[in-house]
Image 1 (cartoon, helix red, strand yellow):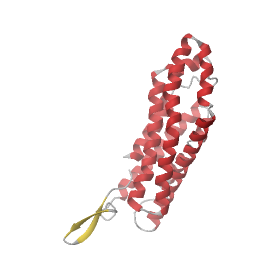
Image 2 (cartoon, one colour):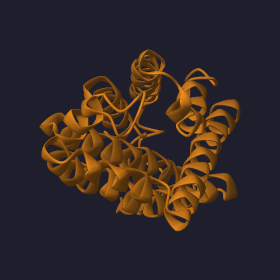
Image 3 (cartoon, helix red, strand yellow):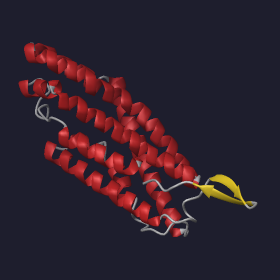
Image 4 (tube, rainbow, N blue to C red):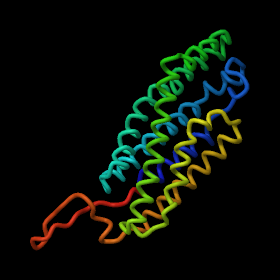
Length: 226
């Protein structure tokens, strides 16, 4: 269930993340935040949240196979591939710097070198823009499927998560309370889509692409991206 897991992981990331670096990345509070085990746990959750979000686009492409869903699929996969190296540096590199910085604060000057590397910032920003494209295309594909009569569900149900995907990049500039609120709202949006997908399921909807033969008649198998 990539939709629900993406929402829960995103909420976990932004609620569990230590925010000691919010004011300064070279303060003792920042060193303690980076060195905390919760820093690693939270950032792993954030990376996995984006992976699961990309899987939502992949899943809807498996079901529908339209140009819009194909864009959702490949922009999501490409976006995650570009984002993950930066998350790796944040997760493990800053954790190691933070642990060293507790004893030697001068080490913390390396934080900005890790975070501000031009190639790292470029790939991270581009990756999150592609994730945004994937989320919006997934919402469009859902809306098109509902309006065509393919699925019986609210046409707007995927838009909250699509908007959430588009706001993943801007939320990095919010204060800690704003980022935590974003995580909760993102999780709610994921649950809305998952519940709508579950309620929309029917024998005619659950079988879109994989084909089998029953009494000489082709049927298909699959499920909505809950």
